[in-house]
Image (tube, rainbow, N blue to C red; front, side):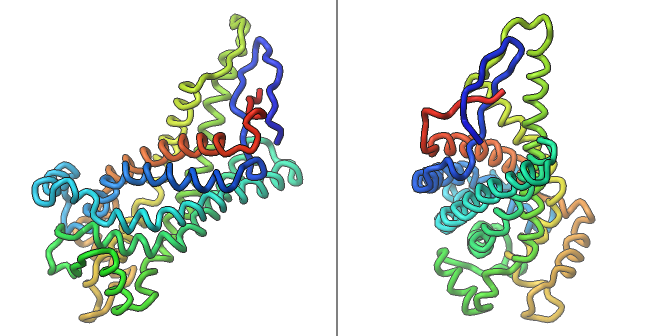
Length: 341
């Protein structure tokens, strides 16, 4: 895709041109990406921790009560239990995610538009959905074991020992105890559900984001194409940021509604030790679902929905704006960055 600046006609809205994989300085892309997304992860971590504690609680507990309890009993550090472990895994996982995302978008986009001749909107949605799917599957190879360890650290002090929670002094201690108890497979508890949760979640998110983003720009294009509008419109940084944020929030809503029950079951499988049909045995997926429903009905599957929606919306909004900024900062030829009509 050529990044050239087209003629600014009176009835035209110029939107930022896309940057594909071939246009990126890879070393800058991954180095800056690691730094930027580490900061994003640190900002959003407290909401992820509260969501996790809600999901493994024996009864419904509000976010406010959880936050108050953490601050009163554990101090501000309680909001960052397991963060060191999480950030160590986030860097390689993000690298896998971003690499798979951009490579897939570049290859599938060419096939969808050039070879299959699909309309622009359909080609964009299919490309983004496929890219989100492949990126999530690649990243889960790293994220699942990191999730297993960090989530167990997140719930320290939040649940009584009767629920089957082991005590850990650090991420390394949790890692070694899991290996001794269950072997390598213990680090991948819930891997299948993670794929079932995050792969479709990412596919829905990226497809929804593509539709929402294009719809908003098309609406602006239609408005500025009115006969009584004498000037074209070249969006400034604030306008582009606003469109990205609204599109990300809309995509997050669709994705969260679809995958919340799977995420709750996955979290319980990864965190809780007891509940199997026999003493000492790990609970199965079916047993986990049955226990969850018995504790609170179908609504229990949506425990932590508020924090997850908020976390996902904020994460997605921050991620997409950071990601678009990262891509433009990492472009090989900054002079060629422009707009398309």
